[in-house]
Image (tube, rainbow, N blue to C red):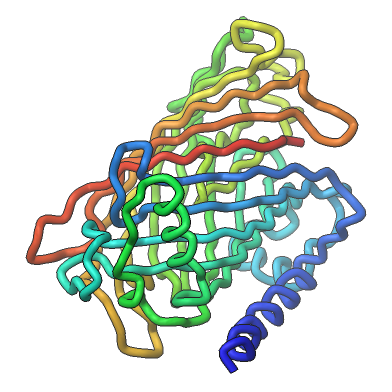
Length: 366
Protein backbone atom coordinates (compact mmCIF):
# COMPACT_ATOMS: atom_id res chain seq x y z
CA UNK A 1 0.00 0.00 0.00
CA UNK A 2 2.76 2.43 0.95
CA UNK A 3 4.57 1.65 -2.33
CA UNK A 4 1.41 2.36 -4.33
CA UNK A 5 0.95 5.71 -2.60
CA UNK A 6 4.56 6.59 -3.40
CA UNK A 7 4.20 5.97 -7.13
CA UNK A 8 0.78 7.65 -7.26
CA UNK A 9 2.31 10.77 -5.74
CA UNK A 10 4.47 11.17 -8.84
CA UNK A 11 1.64 11.01 -11.36
CA UNK A 12 0.92 14.80 -11.20
CA UNK A 13 4.65 15.49 -11.56
CA UNK A 14 4.97 13.29 -14.65
CA UNK A 15 1.91 14.86 -16.28
CA UNK A 16 3.06 18.42 -15.54
CA UNK A 17 6.60 17.81 -16.77
CA UNK A 18 5.36 16.22 -19.98
CA UNK A 19 3.05 19.16 -20.64
CA UNK A 20 5.75 21.75 -20.00
CA UNK A 21 8.35 19.92 -22.13
CA UNK A 22 5.94 19.62 -25.06
CA UNK A 23 5.03 23.33 -24.80
CA UNK A 24 8.68 24.35 -24.91
CA UNK A 25 9.10 22.29 -28.06
CA UNK A 26 12.70 21.25 -27.39
CA UNK A 27 14.11 18.77 -29.88
CA UNK A 28 16.83 16.72 -28.13
CA UNK A 29 18.49 15.84 -31.43
CA UNK A 30 19.29 19.46 -32.18
CA UNK A 31 21.45 22.14 -30.59
CA UNK A 32 24.43 22.15 -28.26
CA UNK A 33 24.38 20.62 -24.79
CA UNK A 34 26.30 21.26 -21.57
CA UNK A 35 25.83 20.16 -17.99
CA UNK A 36 26.92 20.74 -14.42
CA UNK A 37 26.49 19.56 -10.85
CA UNK A 38 26.07 21.93 -7.87
CA UNK A 39 26.62 21.16 -4.21
CA UNK A 40 25.35 23.95 -1.92
CA UNK A 41 25.85 23.68 1.83
CA UNK A 42 26.53 25.69 4.98
CA UNK A 43 29.25 23.25 6.07
CA UNK A 44 31.70 25.55 4.28
CA UNK A 45 31.10 27.91 7.24
CA UNK A 46 31.02 25.21 9.92
CA UNK A 47 27.28 25.47 10.58
CA UNK A 48 24.40 23.03 10.14
CA UNK A 49 21.11 24.92 10.30
CA UNK A 50 18.33 26.66 8.33
CA UNK A 51 19.05 26.15 4.60
CA UNK A 52 21.60 23.42 5.17
CA UNK A 53 21.95 21.50 1.90
CA UNK A 54 21.06 21.57 -1.77
CA UNK A 55 22.18 19.44 -4.71
CA UNK A 56 21.29 19.93 -8.35
CA UNK A 57 22.12 18.35 -11.69
CA UNK A 58 21.53 20.58 -14.71
CA UNK A 59 21.59 20.03 -18.46
CA UNK A 60 21.64 23.09 -20.72
CA UNK A 61 20.62 23.18 -24.35
CA UNK A 62 21.45 25.98 -26.75
CA UNK A 63 18.89 26.31 -29.53
CA UNK A 64 20.26 25.02 -32.85
CA UNK A 65 18.15 27.38 -34.95
CA UNK A 66 17.45 30.90 -33.61
CA UNK A 67 14.28 30.94 -35.70
CA UNK A 68 12.97 27.74 -34.11
CA UNK A 69 9.50 28.07 -32.60
CA UNK A 70 9.89 28.00 -28.78
CA UNK A 71 6.39 26.55 -28.31
CA UNK A 72 2.87 27.83 -27.85
CA UNK A 73 3.06 28.37 -24.09
CA UNK A 74 6.26 30.41 -24.17
CA UNK A 75 5.23 32.35 -27.27
CA UNK A 76 1.99 33.36 -25.55
CA UNK A 77 3.83 34.34 -22.37
CA UNK A 78 6.34 36.48 -24.30
CA UNK A 79 3.50 38.61 -25.69
CA UNK A 80 2.99 39.94 -22.17
CA UNK A 81 6.58 39.82 -20.91
CA UNK A 82 8.33 41.88 -23.56
CA UNK A 83 10.21 39.01 -25.23
CA UNK A 84 7.92 38.48 -28.23
CA UNK A 85 9.96 37.89 -31.38
CA UNK A 86 13.24 37.64 -29.48
CA UNK A 87 15.84 34.96 -30.11
CA UNK A 88 15.55 31.79 -27.99
CA UNK A 89 18.97 31.33 -26.40
CA UNK A 90 19.30 28.55 -23.82
CA UNK A 91 16.99 26.04 -22.13
CA UNK A 92 17.83 24.54 -18.72
CA UNK A 93 16.63 21.20 -17.32
CA UNK A 94 17.28 20.64 -13.61
CA UNK A 95 16.64 18.00 -10.98
CA UNK A 96 17.59 18.54 -7.36
CA UNK A 97 16.91 18.24 -3.67
CA UNK A 98 16.66 20.95 -0.98
CA UNK A 99 16.97 20.52 2.78
CA UNK A 100 16.06 22.81 5.71
CA UNK A 101 16.50 22.15 9.44
CA UNK A 102 16.34 23.92 12.81
CA UNK A 103 19.55 24.72 14.70
CA UNK A 104 19.37 21.79 17.13
CA UNK A 105 19.38 18.62 15.05
CA UNK A 106 19.65 16.22 17.96
CA UNK A 107 16.23 17.02 19.48
CA UNK A 108 13.44 14.59 18.62
CA UNK A 109 10.56 16.74 19.88
CA UNK A 110 8.95 19.55 17.82
CA UNK A 111 10.69 22.94 17.99
CA UNK A 112 7.92 25.48 17.23
CA UNK A 113 10.19 28.48 17.88
CA UNK A 114 12.73 27.38 15.26
CA UNK A 115 12.70 26.73 11.54
CA UNK A 116 10.68 23.64 10.55
CA UNK A 117 12.33 20.53 9.20
CA UNK A 118 11.62 20.51 5.46
CA UNK A 119 12.82 18.97 2.22
CA UNK A 120 11.90 19.03 -1.45
CA UNK A 121 12.69 16.86 -4.46
CA UNK A 122 12.12 18.91 -7.61
CA UNK A 123 12.39 19.31 -11.36
CA UNK A 124 12.75 22.74 -13.01
CA UNK A 125 12.88 23.95 -16.58
CA UNK A 126 13.87 27.38 -17.88
CA UNK A 127 13.86 29.07 -21.27
CA UNK A 128 15.90 32.23 -21.94
CA UNK A 129 15.28 34.85 -24.62
CA UNK A 130 17.90 37.36 -25.73
CA UNK A 131 16.95 40.66 -27.35
CA UNK A 132 18.43 41.82 -30.66
CA UNK A 133 21.53 43.59 -29.25
CA UNK A 134 22.20 41.15 -26.40
CA UNK A 135 21.53 43.68 -23.64
CA UNK A 136 18.35 42.15 -22.17
CA UNK A 137 17.78 38.54 -21.13
CA UNK A 138 14.28 37.30 -20.23
CA UNK A 139 14.00 33.93 -18.50
CA UNK A 140 10.73 32.05 -17.98
CA UNK A 141 10.88 29.17 -15.50
CA UNK A 142 8.65 26.40 -14.25
CA UNK A 143 9.30 24.24 -11.19
CA UNK A 144 7.48 21.28 -9.71
CA UNK A 145 8.41 19.27 -6.65
CA UNK A 146 7.25 17.23 -3.70
CA UNK A 147 7.77 17.95 -0.01
CA UNK A 148 7.46 15.68 2.99
CA UNK A 149 8.67 12.07 3.36
CA UNK A 150 8.89 11.50 -0.39
CA UNK A 151 11.43 14.30 -0.80
CA UNK A 152 13.85 11.83 0.85
CA UNK A 153 15.64 14.73 2.57
CA UNK A 154 15.54 12.82 5.88
CA UNK A 155 17.26 9.78 4.43
CA UNK A 156 19.86 11.93 2.66
CA UNK A 157 20.82 13.91 5.76
CA UNK A 158 20.91 10.86 8.02
CA UNK A 159 23.20 9.06 5.57
CA UNK A 160 25.53 12.08 5.28
CA UNK A 161 25.72 12.48 9.05
CA UNK A 162 26.36 8.78 9.64
CA UNK A 163 29.15 8.86 7.06
CA UNK A 164 30.87 12.10 8.03
CA UNK A 165 29.82 13.57 11.39
CA UNK A 166 28.48 10.83 13.64
CA UNK A 167 25.59 13.05 14.80
CA UNK A 168 22.17 11.61 13.97
CA UNK A 169 19.43 14.13 13.02
CA UNK A 170 16.47 13.11 15.18
CA UNK A 171 13.63 15.49 14.32
CA UNK A 172 12.61 14.55 10.78
CA UNK A 173 9.34 13.11 12.06
CA UNK A 174 8.34 16.78 12.55
CA UNK A 175 8.98 17.87 8.94
CA UNK A 176 6.37 19.74 6.91
CA UNK A 177 3.91 17.38 5.26
CA UNK A 178 3.80 15.99 1.77
CA UNK A 179 2.49 18.31 -0.94
CA UNK A 180 2.95 18.76 -4.67
CA UNK A 181 4.60 22.17 -5.16
CA UNK A 182 4.39 24.38 -8.24
CA UNK A 183 6.11 27.67 -9.04
CA UNK A 184 6.33 29.87 -12.15
CA UNK A 185 9.06 32.52 -12.35
CA UNK A 186 9.86 35.37 -14.72
CA UNK A 187 13.18 37.21 -14.59
CA UNK A 188 14.38 40.19 -16.63
CA UNK A 189 18.11 40.95 -16.62
CA UNK A 190 19.36 44.16 -18.28
CA UNK A 191 22.77 45.66 -18.95
CA UNK A 192 23.57 48.84 -17.01
CA UNK A 193 26.02 50.66 -19.25
CA UNK A 194 26.60 53.55 -16.86
CA UNK A 195 28.23 51.20 -14.34
CA UNK A 196 30.17 49.12 -16.88
CA UNK A 197 33.77 49.51 -18.02
CA UNK A 198 35.06 48.51 -21.46
CA UNK A 199 38.81 49.02 -22.07
CA UNK A 200 39.96 49.36 -25.70
CA UNK A 201 43.17 47.48 -24.90
CA UNK A 202 41.47 44.14 -24.39
CA UNK A 203 42.04 44.02 -20.64
CA UNK A 204 39.62 43.15 -17.89
CA UNK A 205 36.06 44.44 -18.26
CA UNK A 206 33.45 45.31 -15.69
CA UNK A 207 29.87 44.45 -16.60
CA UNK A 208 26.94 45.66 -14.52
CA UNK A 209 23.43 44.26 -14.78
CA UNK A 210 20.20 44.91 -12.95
CA UNK A 211 17.42 42.37 -12.63
CA UNK A 212 13.92 41.87 -11.32
CA UNK A 213 12.16 38.59 -10.69
CA UNK A 214 8.59 37.58 -9.87
CA UNK A 215 7.67 34.09 -8.65
CA UNK A 216 4.17 32.76 -8.08
CA UNK A 217 3.18 29.40 -6.64
CA UNK A 218 2.62 27.39 -3.49
CA UNK A 219 6.39 26.73 -3.27
CA UNK A 220 7.24 30.43 -3.13
CA UNK A 221 5.55 33.69 -4.07
CA UNK A 222 7.76 36.80 -4.07
CA UNK A 223 9.07 39.82 -5.96
CA UNK A 224 12.79 40.53 -6.03
CA UNK A 225 15.30 42.92 -7.56
CA UNK A 226 19.06 43.25 -7.51
CA UNK A 227 22.34 44.38 -9.05
CA UNK A 228 25.36 42.36 -10.22
CA UNK A 229 28.93 43.34 -11.14
CA UNK A 230 31.14 40.91 -13.07
CA UNK A 231 34.88 41.32 -13.72
CA UNK A 232 36.56 39.34 -16.49
CA UNK A 233 37.52 39.30 -20.16
CA UNK A 234 35.30 39.03 -23.21
CA UNK A 235 32.11 39.19 -21.15
CA UNK A 236 28.62 39.18 -22.58
CA UNK A 237 26.54 42.35 -22.25
CA UNK A 238 24.15 40.62 -19.89
CA UNK A 239 26.59 39.31 -17.30
CA UNK A 240 24.85 36.70 -15.23
CA UNK A 241 25.21 35.82 -11.57
CA UNK A 242 27.57 33.13 -10.35
CA UNK A 243 26.73 29.50 -9.69
CA UNK A 244 24.07 28.22 -7.35
CA UNK A 245 20.78 26.41 -7.30
CA UNK A 246 18.78 29.53 -8.10
CA UNK A 247 21.01 30.61 -10.97
CA UNK A 248 20.49 30.60 -14.72
CA UNK A 249 24.22 30.33 -15.35
CA UNK A 250 24.86 30.13 -19.08
CA UNK A 251 27.61 31.78 -21.11
CA UNK A 252 25.72 33.90 -23.63
CA UNK A 253 26.75 34.37 -27.22
CA UNK A 254 29.97 36.38 -27.02
CA UNK A 255 29.89 37.13 -30.75
CA UNK A 256 27.58 40.09 -30.10
CA UNK A 257 29.12 43.31 -31.31
CA UNK A 258 29.87 45.83 -28.57
CA UNK A 259 29.53 49.57 -29.33
CA UNK A 260 33.21 50.10 -28.45
CA UNK A 261 34.85 47.07 -30.06
CA UNK A 262 34.35 43.53 -31.28
CA UNK A 263 34.66 41.21 -28.34
CA UNK A 264 35.24 38.21 -30.62
CA UNK A 265 38.84 39.30 -31.22
CA UNK A 266 39.82 39.24 -27.56
CA UNK A 267 41.03 36.38 -25.42
CA UNK A 268 39.52 35.37 -22.08
CA UNK A 269 42.88 34.03 -20.85
CA UNK A 270 43.82 34.74 -17.24
CA UNK A 271 47.57 34.66 -16.42
CA UNK A 272 48.13 31.56 -18.58
CA UNK A 273 46.69 30.46 -21.92
CA UNK A 274 44.89 27.40 -20.55
CA UNK A 275 42.98 29.29 -17.85
CA UNK A 276 40.09 31.77 -17.96
CA UNK A 277 38.78 33.46 -14.85
CA UNK A 278 36.05 35.84 -13.74
CA UNK A 279 34.58 37.13 -10.49
CA UNK A 280 31.26 38.69 -9.57
CA UNK A 281 29.46 40.38 -6.71
CA UNK A 282 25.69 40.67 -6.41
CA UNK A 283 22.98 41.80 -4.05
CA UNK A 284 19.28 40.98 -4.16
CA UNK A 285 16.30 41.92 -2.01
CA UNK A 286 13.01 39.99 -2.02
CA UNK A 287 9.54 40.78 -0.72
CA UNK A 288 8.21 37.40 0.37
CA UNK A 289 4.51 36.59 0.29
CA UNK A 290 4.88 32.83 0.73
CA UNK A 291 7.63 30.29 1.42
CA UNK A 292 6.51 26.67 1.82
CA UNK A 293 9.65 25.87 3.84
CA UNK A 294 8.63 28.44 6.48
CA UNK A 295 4.86 28.84 6.14
CA UNK A 296 4.22 25.12 5.76
CA UNK A 297 2.03 23.33 3.27
CA UNK A 298 -0.92 25.17 1.75
CA UNK A 299 -3.58 22.47 1.89
CA UNK A 300 -2.98 20.92 5.30
CA UNK A 301 -2.05 22.01 8.81
CA UNK A 302 1.46 21.33 10.04
CA UNK A 303 4.74 22.85 11.25
CA UNK A 304 5.31 26.51 10.38
CA UNK A 305 6.97 29.65 11.66
CA UNK A 306 6.32 33.38 11.09
CA UNK A 307 8.28 34.39 7.99
CA UNK A 308 9.81 37.82 7.40
CA UNK A 309 8.52 40.05 4.63
CA UNK A 310 11.96 41.28 3.49
CA UNK A 311 14.90 38.96 2.84
CA UNK A 312 18.21 39.94 1.21
CA UNK A 313 21.21 38.05 -0.19
CA UNK A 314 24.75 39.28 -0.86
CA UNK A 315 26.99 36.99 -2.93
CA UNK A 316 30.59 36.76 -4.12
CA UNK A 317 31.55 34.35 -6.90
CA UNK A 318 34.76 33.11 -8.48
CA UNK A 319 34.87 31.07 -11.68
CA UNK A 320 37.69 29.20 -13.46
CA UNK A 321 37.30 27.92 -17.03
CA UNK A 322 39.68 25.47 -18.69
CA UNK A 323 39.27 26.01 -22.47
CA UNK A 324 41.80 23.34 -23.52
CA UNK A 325 39.71 20.58 -21.90
CA UNK A 326 37.21 20.62 -24.78
CA UNK A 327 36.90 17.19 -26.37
CA UNK A 328 34.77 15.35 -28.89
CA UNK A 329 32.52 14.24 -26.00
CA UNK A 330 32.17 17.45 -23.95
CA UNK A 331 32.69 21.17 -24.05
CA UNK A 332 35.34 22.85 -21.89
CA UNK A 333 35.19 22.18 -18.15
CA UNK A 334 34.79 24.83 -15.46
CA UNK A 335 34.64 25.18 -11.67
CA UNK A 336 32.79 27.86 -9.73
CA UNK A 337 32.37 28.73 -6.09
CA UNK A 338 29.85 31.17 -4.67
CA UNK A 339 29.53 32.48 -1.13
CA UNK A 340 26.13 33.84 -0.05
CA UNK A 341 25.17 35.76 3.08
CA UNK A 342 21.40 35.76 3.77
CA UNK A 343 19.51 37.89 6.24
CA UNK A 344 17.18 36.19 8.80
CA UNK A 345 14.14 34.66 7.08
CA UNK A 346 11.76 34.21 10.02
CA UNK A 347 10.76 35.64 13.39
CA UNK A 348 10.97 33.82 16.70
CA UNK A 349 11.05 34.24 20.45
CA UNK A 350 14.60 32.85 20.32
CA UNK A 351 17.54 34.46 18.46
CA UNK A 352 17.47 34.04 14.67
CA UNK A 353 20.76 34.50 12.85
CA UNK A 354 21.85 35.51 9.40
CA UNK A 355 23.23 32.61 7.42
CA UNK A 356 26.24 31.98 5.17
CA UNK A 357 26.54 29.08 2.75
CA UNK A 358 28.67 28.13 -0.20
CA UNK A 359 27.92 26.60 -3.61
CA UNK A 360 30.44 24.56 -5.57
CA UNK A 361 29.60 23.92 -9.23
CA UNK A 362 31.59 21.72 -11.60
CA UNK A 363 30.61 21.01 -15.19
CA UNK A 364 31.02 21.66 -18.88
CA UNK A 365 30.10 24.65 -21.02
CA UNK A 366 29.07 24.97 -24.66
